[in-house]
Image (spheres, rainbow, N blue to C red):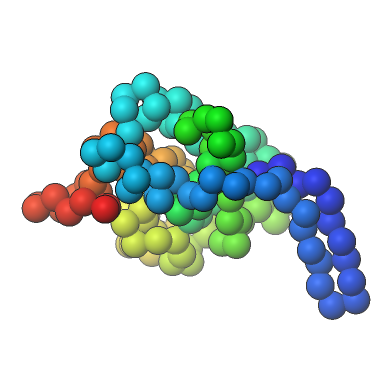
Length: 154
C-alpha cells in the first residue's frame, strides 16, 4: 500500500494510506465463479503479490502474516490490481543492512504458517515465500493444501 502522509499527535501516529475500495482477496475468491480464479487472473494476481513481497524483502522487511485477507483489491476496473496490507506483525532488521530480519516468535495465520514457525525454529523472510505459495494454491484451486479431505476456503 502506498503511504501518502503521516500525522503525529502527542499520543498517536496516523498513517494516510492509499484507498483500496474493493475489499480483500479472500472475499473476491469466494465470490468468483467456482470459488477460485481463472489461470490468467491467478497468474496476474500472483505477479502483483510477489512483486509486493519482493519490494518488502528488498527493504529488509518480513511481513510474517501474508494471507488473502491481507491482500487488498485496489481498483474497480481490474480484478488483479492488488496490494499487500496489514504490516502489524512485520519485522525489520535491527542491524540493517548487515543482518537480515530473523525471529523465533510464533506469529501469522494458521493455514499459511511455514514449517519453521510451527517448529519454533529461527526464520526470516523465507516464511513470506511459503505463504505466497499457499496463496497461489488457493487462488487456482479454491482450497487449502495439506488437508487429506480437501476443505474449500468458501
